[in-house]
Length: 195
Image 1 (cartoon, rainbow, N blue to C red):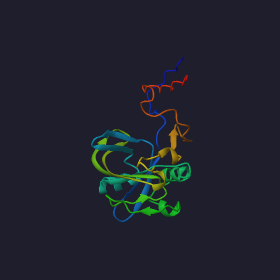
Image 2: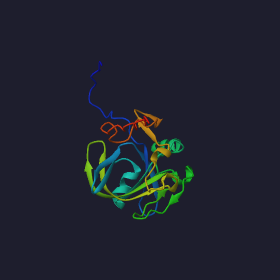
Image 3: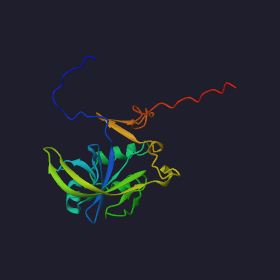
Image 4: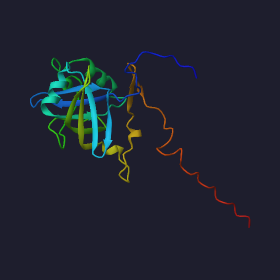
């Protein structure tokens, strides 16, 4: 395979276009962020990268809390809107007709239409040039009941989540295998009864 060498850049893809809800105690807001992820499983730790010039930056820094709300295919247009317009001039919950749901561990609201809302408390802010990283403890994960199976497993494949790559949104495709499938032992075929 032949590759073209490019200058360094922020070109990792795909990324999750999440809607991050936050509050300063008086006003609630939503910022769409694609630069987020998991840092550790124990303790459960996540991060979001936010430009200091964004309206939500000071809200998150002041409150020390935010909620990561996953984006579905149906919410993609809303997520795009929340990433373009500033909460300093627009009430995004009202404009996008989104439902504020009370979180269990933080003061800022969850987005009711999101299939999964992850409540977070900031533990450290790390300046990184154009963006600052808000490293945060995951305090609670709230999942829509329709995505839970009888065994209590989360079935996010039913949520129709979206991905973001180089300025475009994409619907997630078909499953290619579960974690560990490459090393799983093949099931033996039952022997035929020769009697």
